[in-house]
Each structure stands twice: as C-alpha cells, then as structure tokens.
Image (cartoon, rainbow, N blue to C red; front, side, top):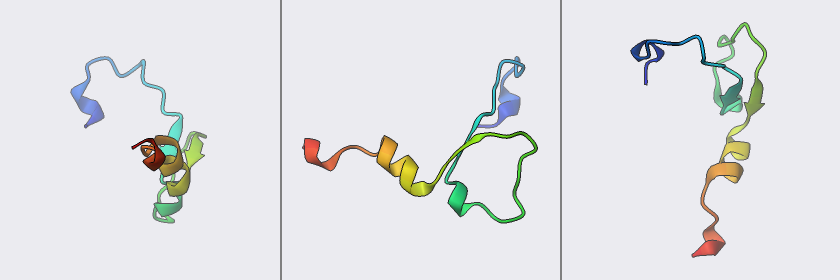
Length: 52
C-alpha cells in the first residue's frame, strides 16, 4: 500500500524494519528503527503448527 494514499501522514511512525537480513546492501533508511530478521518474523507471526 502506497503511503501517498493517506491524507494525514504526520501520524505515521516508521520504527520497524522486517526481513532485515534480506535487504540489499545499498538499501538504508536515515532514521534508526527496530529490526527483525526473517527467522524472527516467522517465529513471531507464523501460526503455531502444533495448534492444529
């Protein structure tokens, strides 16, 4: 979803990058953020396979 679709962008707070271990080496943001690797994202958000 493009950020430009929202009228009031001032309330957005960019504070998390996910799949940080998969990003290109030249790709970097100016502000400091929290980061999550692919494994951390999957562990946190993937459904628990033992629940079924």
